[in-house]
Amino acid sequence: MTIRLTNTATRSKEVFEPLDPENVRMYVCGPTVYDRAHIGNARPVIVFDVLFRLLRHVYGADRVRYVRNFTDVDDKINARAADSGRSIGDITDETIAWYLEDMRDIGALDPTDMPRATQYIDQMVAFIEDLIAKGHAYEAEGHVLFAVDSWKEGYGKLSGRSVDDMIAGARVEVAPYKRNPMDFVLWKPSTDDLPGWASPWGRGRPGWHIECSAMAHELLGEAFDIHGGGNDLLFPHHENEIAQSKCAGHGFARYWLHNEMLQVEGKKMSKSLGNFFTIRDLLDQGVPGEVIRFVFLSTHYRKPMDWTEKKREEAEATLRKWRALTAETEPGDVPVTIVDAVSDDLNTAGAITELHRLAADGDLRSLKAGAGLLGLLTDDLGGWDALTVDLSGLAAKLAGLRAKAMETKDFSSVDAMKTALTKAGVEVRMSKAGVELVPASGFDPSKLEGV
Image (cartoon, rainbow, N blue to C red; front, side, top):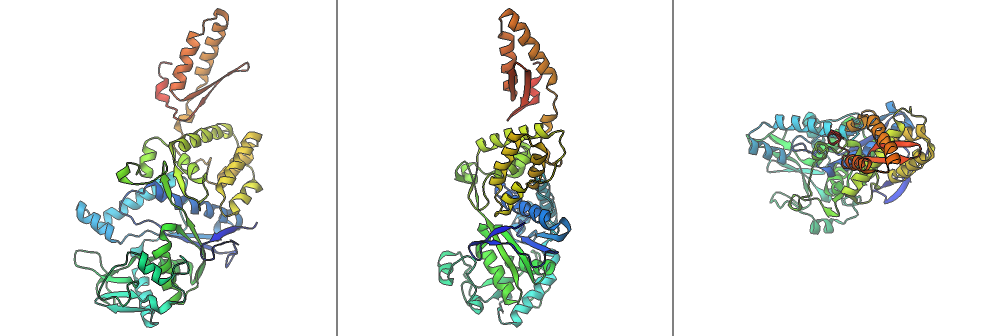
């Protein structure tokens, strides 16, 4: 099986060849934990969950190691603690629990490792000391900064920008202790009211970029296979990760994957536009996590994605149909056509097209197995309680009314019942063979009372 992935570092689709097929390694940048994850945060989670599933399918579940971190030391967390009067530990613990619950509810497997930045401070300090010793970092007024000029030949290659362009287009922190405006913080001093750790440069805390380099090195080694994240991290975060890791002498990541961003109804998500919502908001509104996942998978990860109500409704209708079809079906082997689609640069949209074909052909064992590779139609995806409602009694009642109406030529009671069922989100299918009632998008069993 050949996997091809678009490598941001080379700007081309490449055959994926792991350093060690017995130990395939992937690192994905995780969240800063101070608030609920919004719907845009779900995109990289779902994208790299599919890649994780594919790698496990091809190489074996015990031969793939997936690391996704939690940034639990950050100025946003400090500000949230100051505003709320709560401890930083309480905030980060709560937010991590929320995050994991939400991601599991949209069908994401837990990564192999989920390190917290605060668990790796010693490794970060040692990393920074090494960069100073090699002439790539310097101390200034209690700060330690990476010297971008010390790696001119490599800085900017991932994002395809020159240093001059980056200075002109970036929001760089102006500070008198910087030798170069592009130099970035590896370590900064902490006041008594902020989190801090002992270091050779005084009590302080790490900068953002050093976290991922130190944790990836500690957990995945000198070099590993894949590094992923949203394209909003391409610069400066990933660019800076590469710079400090390469200058420390590490091979670091060989394949870089970046997903595009998300819009809502064709517009950038924004609280001011009223189109900003969290994953939990959708789940609490009764949108099953599997529906959220399906909508995301319907667009290729390297294309901008638009969340719309129409897509949600279509996804729900499709999944209700497939779940009804496969309710009593055991999965077979994952079809080669599904594996081929996902192996072609995570072409999940193409894989879903193939699932529609399998459903139309009645190949239900293949449908269930193929959907499973995408994290769909699995038993652990909740939110489908409505499907368990037994509509057979209502179908029999409607069939009886129809039989009577055929004799009396008075179809008013049939029409009234059909209207009530439709309002409850039930699709009514009537044919010579009988009456079939199917829960559709927006099905609300509470509206069936009295029908």
